[in-house]
Image (cartoon, rainbow, N blue to C red; front, side):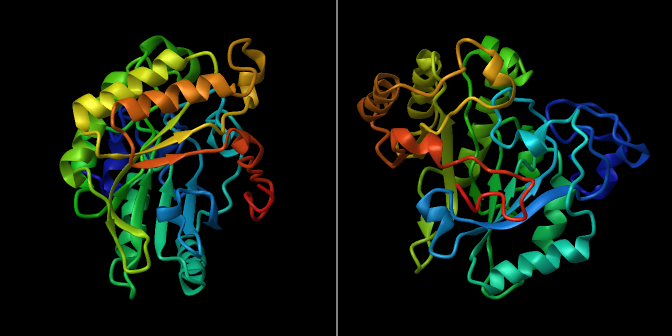
Amino acid sequence: MDISFKSLAKCLLCPRNCGVDRFAGSSGYCHSDYHYNISAVVAHHGEEPVISGKHGICNIFFSHCNLQCVYCQNFQISQNASAHQPAYRDVEKILADIQHHLNSGCRAIGFVSPSHQIPQMASIIRAFEHHQPRPVFVYNSNGYDKVETLRKLEGLIDIYLPDLKYMDAGLALTYSDAKDYPEVAQKGLKEMFRQKGAALHYLDTGQAESGIIIRHLVLPGHIQNSLDVLHFIAEELSPKIHVSLMSQYYPVYKATENDTINRSLSRKEYDTVVNEAEKLGLTRGWIQELSSHDHYRPDFRNTHPFENT
C-alpha cells in the first residue's frame, strides 16, 4: 500500500476503495481532492488528560470524512456534501500555525479524521519528526481504517486514538453509512494493537508518548451495542487496554430527526455500560460526567472552535 501523494491518483487509502483520481477532482466518497483541506489547527484541551497535558494538544482537523455519521459533533466540517471551505490549503501556513502551538507548549500533534488524508498527514509528520522536543504524533480516527494503510503507519504514529463505534452492522449502516464498519474496525484495531500492545508509555511530564486508547461513544437506546464493543475489546484484544467511555452524546445534525437518538444519554444507560466495563476488567481509562454533553459543542465558524465548550 502506497501512502505517498502518488497514491491519490487511484485512491485506495480507506475501506471505501473508491479508486478515483483525486488530482482530477473530488469525485470519491469523501469528496476530497489532493490538497491538505484542513479546517482548523488549534490547541485543544478536551482530549483525555494523558493526551492533552497541561498545554493541550495541537489538533489538526481535516475536512470531510470517510464516514457520514448522522450525529457527528463536527458535522460543520465533516459532511461530504457540504459547501464548507477549509481554512487551510497552503502547507506553509499549516506548518507555521503548528509551530506556533508547539512554541506555546503543546507536546503532541493530533490528526483528527485522517483516514482519507494519509499522504497529507504523513508529510506533516515528516516536517516535524526531527523537531526538538520531538512531538508525539496522535492518530485520532473514527476506526474505519484499512489494515494495509495502518501497516504503513507503523513507526510514524506514536499513539492510536481510534473510535470503536459499532458491533452492529445495522446501526453502522443506519447511522454512519458503513455496513461493514464492525468487521473493518475489528481488523483495524487488531493491527493497532499488534503495533502498540496494551500498555501506555509516558513522557516525564506525565503525558502519553506511545500506545493505544480506544474511545467509545455510548449512544442512547443502543446499550447492547456498547456492551458488545466492550466484550470485543476485553476478549479479542486485552482488558489492559485503556478505554475512554464517553457520555458526551447529544443530538445534532440529522440525529435530531431520529426518534431513538434524539435525546441525551440516561444515567441508567451509562451506568450499565460503565458497570460492564468494570466486570470485564476494563479498568484502565476514563469515564465522563453525565453532564459532559453540555461541554463538547464545537463551532467551526469560529477561529477557536472549542473556546466556549
